[in-house]
Length: 157
Picture 1 (cartoon, rainbow, N blue to C red):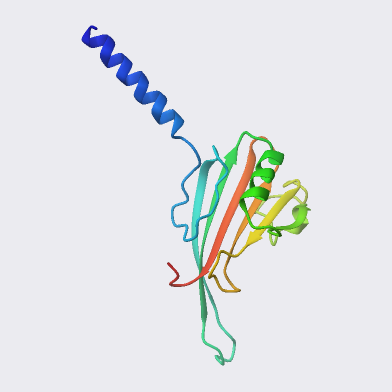
Picture 2 (picture 1 turned 45 degrees about the horizontal axis):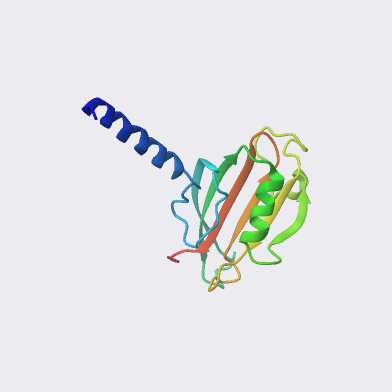
């Protein structure tokens, strides 16, 4: 077999192998094993910290850290919801479908109702405290948007 043909076959084999490894996006900074919808593409990541204090200083400050991952997929919201219903503990789905009013806040410039219906899953991985947890929101559209939020007490690893 000529060298050029062999090189081309190796290159094609490597490309096919890498394409098959695309799989789910990696969630850098995730502390728990958070399921990620297969084939979802990571669009943005935001890390944050929060310190909660009592006005009179009678209780120690509570410090939490969080990460928000925004992902997208061309698959339907129904397929994504079905995946998370199987991947997460029973009872994680909270409130079914929520409209824009169901979110704690709206992004700047959004009008009420712009976000459509959002399905929310909340769960607490084993060993996490009451204040900690993971939230997964699925917003139908083209593409389907998946927002995963991890909130933990500062120092958890």
